[in-house]
Length: 483
Image 1: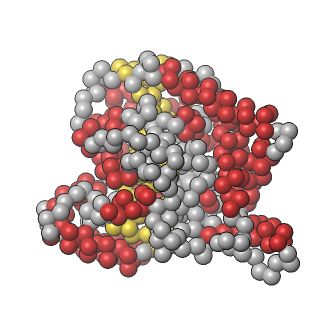
Image 2 (image 1 turned 180 degrees about the vertical axis):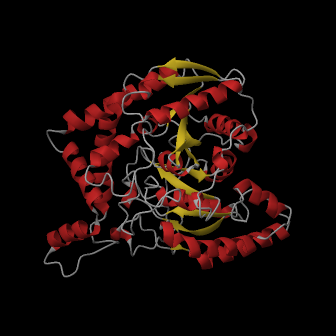
Image 3 (image 1 turned 135 degrees about the vertical axis):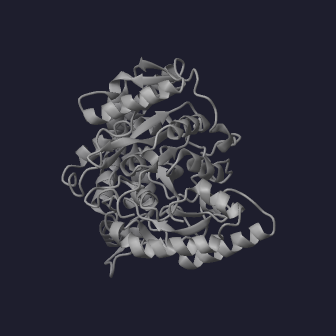
């Protein structure tokens, strides 16, 4: 049962081949057996899962239906879940139980999804390796000595290890797409504003976006359908109709214009990944797509711009964690200043402290114009590049990451080297565009992904291309040894 996709589970439940409760018990047992190897869960919500599964079975018995009704999933541990620890992978929130459900959690629960638990993540979503978590690093099921990518590495590792069919995740600079590439999954970052951020603990508010991680584009379409939609509680949510994503999967790719930016194939790209990207292009050409080279001239400035904007927003967002209202509080403070300093110094990990300090510096008097304002101007140039490109092509294709997954600890002493791994993904966040990573091959036994980008609110187009590609390739069907 654990090898079934979300779509296969929906069909099995509809045909009464098994019940949601039976499936949930199988997966909970599997999590208990295998999760210690990969550390993908922070909390397992067995009691909640079984009660939701029984409720879903009762709803089906009463004639209800739906692709997510009775389907088991997990949430990245920054989506607030009422009465359950929501830690953000941090000591700061280790004792925090959310008093309400995030909109994403509430929408999926209303659709009948069964929550198996909360997945591990880089602390406050800051990282590309899932090594900064207070609960320890997550390991890649394809090779336990390698990282699964971050910050949604727990969700990615759990799905890749067949502990569950799909999970929610978030993407601030590539944190859905990069783990998807590293673990042989399909991951989708929707258009900014497509999925509500209410109840999703913020890292960088103008960049964060929730989305699905699953094994196939078909499953991502199902999960996104349950997550997307306007939310009046979220001031950045966009009131745009949500199409039937599953219905868009079967469209022909005949005449689809695919742009391949020349800037993607620089010296920093592993040539073996470049070859797999070109193989993917050829596969799409067989399906009728037309490919042309394009240019994104300001891409080279994206990483420095991102690593000014994101830390600046993080320093503001994380100022609320002060040891006074909720979260970690130091013992026996001498006075209020000591309470603030020690609570934050002891509660936040090294990477979070580093980014808060960078952000505070960029926003400080005398440096705001030189750093933050200039970074925002570069952000606009990046967006303009994409707008010009989409006048010529329908989607943009390239590598998701410059390298396969690296070994645990390999980049811990050089944060900048880790930051550079986001070179192909952060531009979509700066521009607010939807992006998808899909499996495209292996290098030395480690998965590699190809990234697709589309104009605003064209998630259906991305899912269509990925689904047609997956009907004609089998990379996404491969399973890590031992799982």
